[in-house]
Picture 1 (cartoon, rainbow, N blue to C red):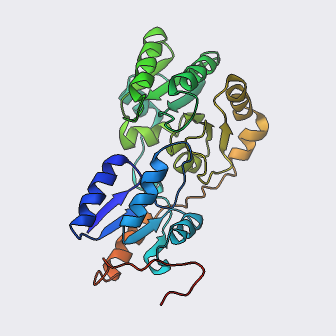
Picture 2 (picture 1 turned 120 degrees about the vertical axis):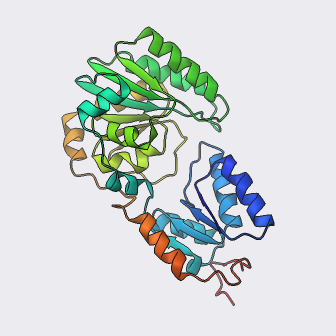
Picture 3 (picture 1 turned 45 degrees about the horizontal axis):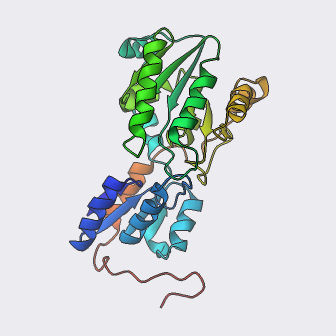
Length: 293
C-alpha cells in the first residue's frame, strides 16, 4: 500500500502513479478545505484516487463521504501533528535559544507565510503589509520560517531575507526549523502568525494564539485561539490588538484543540492491521441519497 498525507502537488504525482499501478492508496487528512489555495483541488482529487481514508475530525470524515467514499472506508482518527507534540521531548527555553543562536524577547512571534495561490491580492502585497505591522510591535522578536515552493514563494523568501538583514537584533530566519525546534518554539512564542496550517492544527495544543492572515486556510476548522483577518493593514493591526488583550489571553487558557489530543498514528496502525485489502481497489460511488447496493 501507499500511505500519503495532505494535499501537495508532489503527493498528487505519486498517487496518480500508484493508482495506475493498482497499488492501494491510504490518504491522511482528507476532507479538509482551503479555499484560498489550489491545494483544495489536489486534496479532493487524491481522495477520489484513494481507497482508505483517515481524517482529522468528524466534519472532515463527513466531507470525504460526501465525495462518494463509503463510510466503511473512512475513519476519524484526529490530527497527526498532535502525536509529535505528545511524543517528542521538547527543548527547554535555554536549549531552544542555543539551537537557533537567538535570544527571545519579552514578546515573541513565529511567522510562516505561504503564497496565496487563489487570491486576488498578491503574496508580495499581503506579506509586505504583515511586515509593516510587525515591525511596529514593541519589545517583540520574530522567528521566520520560509515559504513553500508554490508560485511566488521565492518572492516571500527574498523579502524575509531582506527584512532580517535590516533587523538582525530582533529577527531570525530558517528555511525550516524541523519538528523538534518548531514545536519547541511554540512553547515560547505568543502566537503563530501567517497562513500555515500549523497555526490551526498544532498551535492550539500549546494554548497560544494564531493570527491567520488571508483566505489560504479558509474553510478549515479553527479553535477559539485563532484570530482570522484579511490581508489589509487595519485588519492585521486589529488581530494583534486582540491577541494581546487581557480578555483573549484569559480565553487562551481554556482553549481545546478541535483536532484531538493525540493517538492518531496508533489508531491508523491498528486499523490498517485489521482491514482486509482483498478487492479494495474496486470502489462503488456512495450516494448520500440512496442505499448502496
